[in-house]
Image 1 (cartoon, rainbow, N blue to C red):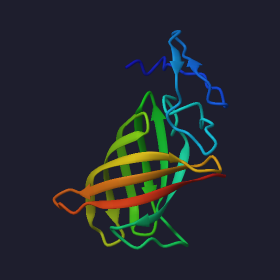
Image 2 (cartoon, rainbow, N blue to C red):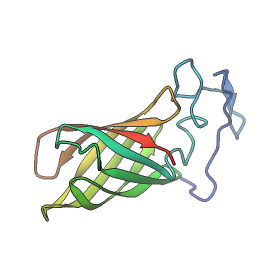
Image 3 (cartoon, one colour):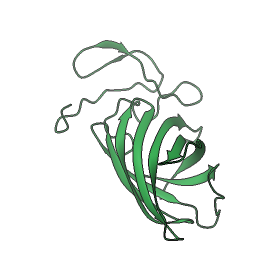
Image 4 (cartoon, helix red, strand yellow):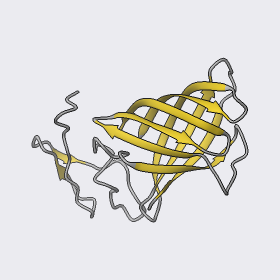
Length: 158
């Protein structure tokens, strides 16, 4: 993987076949919005999640405080993802992982407001919303616990 020279793919908003930077034809966007338009190029963009922020809107692991939900800041380069988060139950957390198309695999660790150190693994699916923002639907497990959890995070702007 060449992090210094990521391959960018051009996109037609009408969803017509694409030609990528190395001349391959009929490259189709995989992340689609309602009406068939591609979002942000497509999921092959090497920095699709870079500088995006998300807030947790639901979780099976804990109640989400609508006035102070956990906020996640994402960075991405060449499919490598990292970032941090803080919010209602979390003092500070960090994550690192990879993205392949519309799938994200992460390892995370955080300090809870109760003083507990918590870590685990997650697998997320990227979904496009009608207004152009992204949703992350995350399946995760805490280390040492076989309970599967699901959370949904929605992109925030501004």
